[in-house]
Length: 555
Image (cartoon, rainbow, N blue to C red; front, side, top):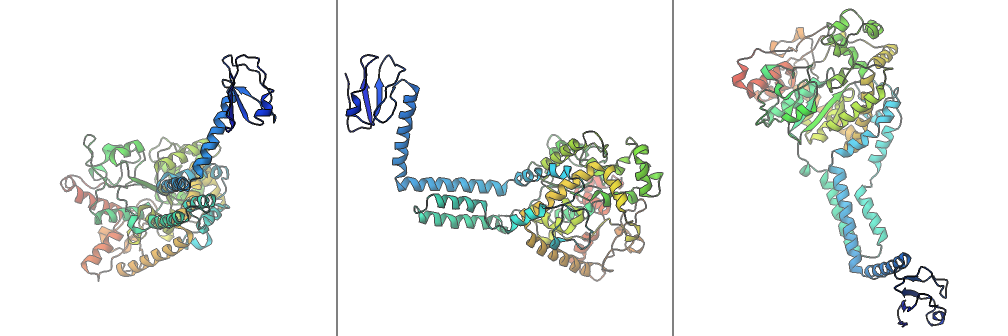
């Protein structure tokens, strides 16, 4: 028996036998799709009027044709409804909104972007990213320069197209002419969300912080900022045990080094910022999971000159009177096993917890540098550059959601100009080769620093806020300081304000203006209190019973 329905696009033919011919159907159903129902499911096909092939229902090609036509008919009917089209639009807007929220709130966005710069930074070892001219630090000389990193930041800053609005615009282009009221309203809402996400109302100041205090990188000034912020808000500090000033450095940090920490019940510490050799697994035992981690680097050439003056009594430096002499003999005479000799070789890498015994030309140097950079990117939310200290403080202000007053400071633990020595270009190249691991780490994070400036703050806003920070610092200096600036230790009147002296460096301090009211004096006093004295003060306030039992130790 053969059946058909002339009004349908699909013709069903039931064949009693496998060899039945279909030539007669060409005149009855020209150009229509014919499906053969045959238990035998023959694999042979017959030609129809317009060159179409006819397959049995059990044949896979026949199933594919039938399924595809049914799907197309369903989509045609569904999209012809304006009501359904508006729901598609709404769904796309929700997807765009979700993408925008993840991109702006996830701390890994900047990290993933920064990692892309690693290979370029390491392969171009003699290059250093250029600071935009309008952001040049008026107190720091420029070193080596690279090319177009800042151009990328400028393009990001100048572009006014938010990724979310771009996505919305694409949706509008696709469905132009439909749902205009909904699109207009949604765009206004998204604009409002973008502006609100950067407003003070949605910015929550961070109070759980780990600062890896590196050596000779202006880290004492940052320590003072953290001490003042925490003390003024009654936050708890993860301080070294037994009134030490460091976390038993240079030993790898362990949670037992923190006064008051109990591995069984723990304790809610807010800020950890004393010198330590970093080990994330141990730090995370003490600090909460949502803690913000940051650190600071310095150009290895300037840092090496400072280290040589400050630590000139260590064994690595004791046999030489000049830095140039040490660099000429270090390849043969340096002994890494001698205590404190780590200061003389890749001390930045050492502070971050890596093996520092590697120099230029060493096997797998680039791989080890890449591993170090990747680990720092993973463990730290922000890495600052002391060569651009004011810009670093503005970036920190935005990252922590603090105020300008929270990040202002005076230079602490700083040497007098008389003990600073100019480094020749030849000596600078020797330092880079000797501290090759530090140099590669610095290259990478100096590049990502300026990328973060462009993405988090913006160059024009950075310029304005740096100017405001310097004005505030000058105003505080005029109010607080008797001499208007730092003085040599021999001229400091209050013995309690004299900074710790070490090596050949002359560490300067400040004299407090005597004509201050009580509140202003307390504020100014905290700004100029040296590191060791401030640490002991906080220890005594936080652990009054234990403080009396321990003699202050400077380590």
